[in-house]
Image 1 (cartoon, rainbow, N blue to C red):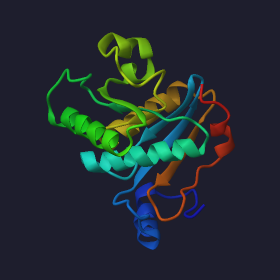
Image 2 (cartoon, helix red, strand yellow):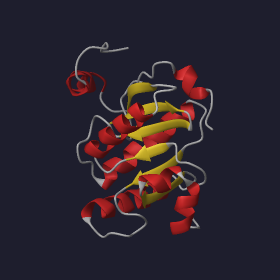
Image 3 (cartoon, rainbow, N blue to C red):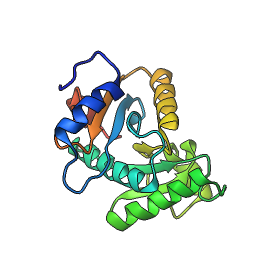
Length: 193
């Protein structure tokens, strides 16, 4: 642990980021929270670093989140969330998530990812298949990438309190020059359900 458990995330980040910088090939950082839910492990990004990330930043955050989830021995299944469901709305935030998908697919064509989509479509395959039967995303998404910090924090807190059976793990940082700390990582490895 670098900063301890007391204080605000953004205050710690402002101190630590200049010390470690970004790793090679990375120009942004992101935060991801892990929830150990009865339905399986769910990761939400970006919960603490970028207030309104660009598609380019979201693409980097998505790729780093997938890399982090793989380190737990879990195959990433990524949903890019929006109020728009596979093109049902044409507005800046939906366009941002569609552009993010395009950028991620160009850099990691093997990654199981789809979007932009509603939260229920991300978590329930039958709902997603009703709207997008040829979605490459199979099963429930385990990485939920939000269009902005507000959506990420609201979603994280709602999911956290609605199912406290298995608990949650606080944010780990991605993109830094040193590995982020994920408390109790062994519990995350137990099941991908």
